[in-house]
Image (cartoon, rainbow, N blue to C red):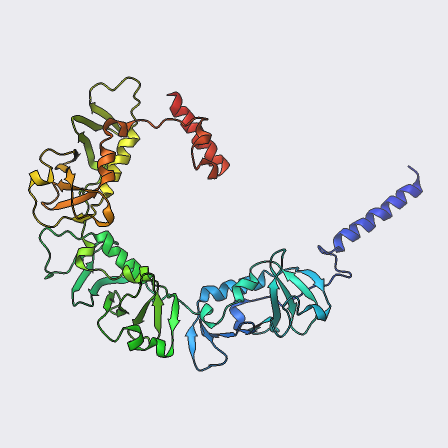
Length: 493
């Protein structure tokens, strides 16, 4: 290689280094850009929407308020998560695609004064961000231009739908700011005058009926159902807001007899939520909170979850045990009896002594059935006092017996079909050892128990192997492969 060639290569290398050191990630020569000031959420003081939507968000201290510019005297609490989401989306607006700079296209893209949504974000120490948002683009996102400029861009992302809201859309919809664990006492007052007071226990989810409450004979409170009321109360969310005449007591029904839920909190405060009488099926329910002039509309199911009386909170479970302490399990259906006993961490069939030829016992199926029975609830308590002969439980169609460490066995006997079931669903009499009441159980319980030994049979591999099991194809590949390998290994055992 001669001297001239070496010099030329050296110059080329130096130029290449200079180009690489000074080049931009995006070529800017001749390319239209939408360059906006950086968004600092902590410095944003207001967000204004006008044109296609009208709303103004103002930060007061650490709290956001939303106001209708036409009624500036009425301010409402804003959902801060919506504000944060909108500002995050604005900050994510990077390198939108340039479309055109012809002003005559603004109407076509709904970026003109007639249809455009004008967005103005004010933050201290930086220029305001002013944009006009138009219709959705076929390629995704929405058309956008900077206020006062003609250039049109396509802004992909979530900015458009995070800000395209009116005053109601920005309003905070959660009625109360508390956690279920903040509640120490619940008082449920029905429109008919029934009052039920429940006290929270030392541990989350523990509830008891207040002393002095008159209880039906053999009544058992289900603490899980009481806890559901507390959780529903703490998570109440409005579907809409009532104003003017629509919010007046005569219109909502809150002026007459109605249901009320009161909650005492750890800090000594008391909250009371008033629920208007239920309307037509599926209709929203008006609600009001003491100390708050706003009238809210709740979904019917949210209100129903709070309208509980003592009988609605009855414990309808027929077994009470800790599953790890179960030592023996017995099912008797007709003339067939099946028993399994726990040996260490596994279950063994002790009756029948000899399993049918080809029968593969699966210990995990026993655990699954015991778990199912532990959570099983009757549909109702049967009225009256039918005799055992009338119920058919003296010669039961099915019997379940569960032995628990250091406790007497718990039993449930299923008898004849019970009259009075709702919606034509078949139910059967059930008598348990947990109390002397008579319960009704749905037909599927009897049908399942009638399977006897088959309940503990190892599931068969579907044709085509593990890959044919429904739902596996929805799992991540690595998880699916592990499950399929385990199933194949079990099949070969």
